[in-house]
Image: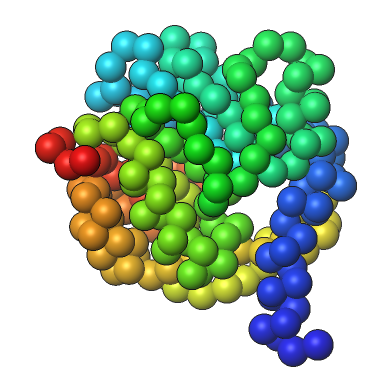
Length: 210
């Protein structure tokens, strides 16, 4: 199998990898909200009771729970049903839906969308299409926060020792996509040492855009 074929096969298996290792992932996922600084930046300008989507929510820990504890009607979306089953057994966290961020349609536009360690599992062309789609789901003034990569390319990560697909566009491309989609980039921080080396994009939808 060629390298391109291997990466393509791996990308198609993302949901299956997380489903197979849901318990191990949940066990190993820190309950400490290292993302708290970014979540606060995301949430601070939102109105009370802002409707938020957590795309790739996993077992709901810690991000879905963090948002809900601050009074936000958050809906968690994940492609791996086994992850959602763990979240439901743990107790009421938020409405949880099995779905794909590339196709899920909320009943109405939302105030915010978070995808922490989820969006970067999409192939580069899928990311570009999905980025534009997510921007359209936001209300004017709505906020989008994604973890991306520091450089353009495809690579692999690990979930419970099994390879999983990762990809990123370039920072310049994310900025261009943001402009084209009616978003203003507030922050694009690469390899942030304050939250485990994540690269984070935080943008808002311009007011007056449909």
